[in-house]
Amino acid sequence: IFSTEGGVIFERNTAMFGQGLLQTFEPKFYYVYIPTRAQNQIPNFDSAFQDISFATLFTENQFSGYDRINDANQVTVGVMSRLLARETGIEQVRAGVAQRFYFKDQEVTLPGVPVRESSSSDLLAALSGTVAPGLIAEIGWQHNTATSQTRKFAVGARYQPDFGKVLNVGYRFARD
Image 1 (cartoon, rainbow, N blue to C red):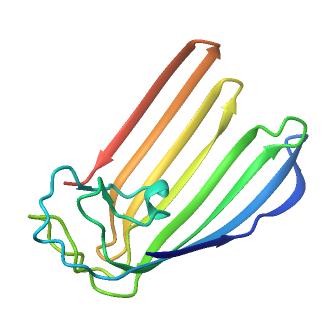
Image 2 (spheres, one colour):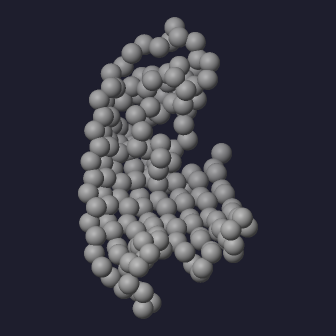
């Protein structure tokens, strides 16, 4: 398995609503090469296909467990931007997009799961931020670029008025 990751963080001072902020711009790439190895004779006890997320887009193996290791020749590119309070370093806003691009057809899969036919993953986008003291809102979107359809959408809020007290509210949509 060969993988390499790279990125840079650009920072600049800015201000909004009278508050001093540090804005970041963080492009990132992650390349993985894993040669194809026949794994049909190995029983699959606990491997499953991992759901796509910002965390799984930047990992080597698309399967959970160790009964299957995917074949890969792919690159993931993404960009994140944050607004941090200059005084405290607390994140006020975070926005990001990412997508994986495949340079070869998939050969290793799980029993009963069809091979991937697309040359790219779904596009992921996320936005979160502090709306008021103790109140954080977030939105996540997964868009299939081949079919031009929203595959998943989530919106939520977390209110934490005091230590040990929290109220979470959310809505999730998943196609099929």
